[in-house]
Image (cartoon, rainbow, N blue to C red; front, side, top):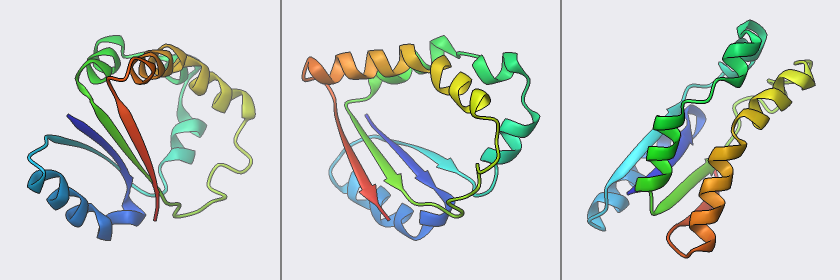
Length: 118
């Protein structure tokens, strides 16, 4: 399963990417991020919401994916300017186990990844 992360501002690339995945006979799961919502999350989320870890979802995702494609594109590169750095760090810290599992799977040769700048 190919897991694809793509922001809204890269939408013109969505269909060609999906087509390539389907033509290759692969299964793609797309995580489509709307532009301009990250700041709102960090401004409104409680500490519990910032650090919530959906274990079954994230571990299941790692178990099933064999490749990750992350499209790098920014609608507003300053969107998170002024957001409390402790909130950003708390969110990152809450995902450490997920990243550890992804890294381990990659080191075992069971998963690969690609970054694409749009």
